[in-house]
Length: 198
Image (cartoon, rainbow, N blue to C red; front, side, top):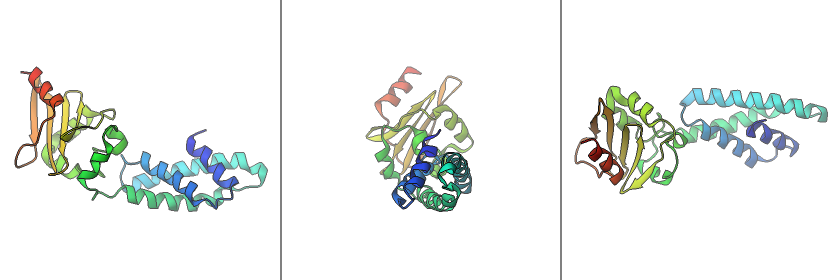
């Protein structure tokens, strides 16, 4: 049984007066949904809740408790949390708080990321290539600027000045993409990658 499935019966048995536990369930649903956008997130979160309610009913029916009666309230709480999590206006500097997290955990390359619009503007048709190269396991690091390194790729983020520097290895040569204006600092890990390819 999933973690969410386990949480719901606890809420029910406690009389569901606990909005805090309901909020925790909603926060879990929202956190895991950052890589999906808008209505699709809510649809998937609601599907998880429906499945959980079905499983909870099997467990709680002998006790005379109907889990489906609380599904609407949990969906509403989840929707509020998802709406808060999906604000695309998040400040770039908030990314500094996520050093050490994977880019999948924070949705760095998704439409809800504060860098998404600039990243698409800089990369154009190569956005998908960067997404594939960095994959979900790349860790956000910091050395004067934020950066991630993937398979034949890197992304540097100057969160203070809202600028990006991106590298993709194509046919053995680095293709560099940068925001307009003055070049941003390149961390030593990235400089070492560039040096090796010369």
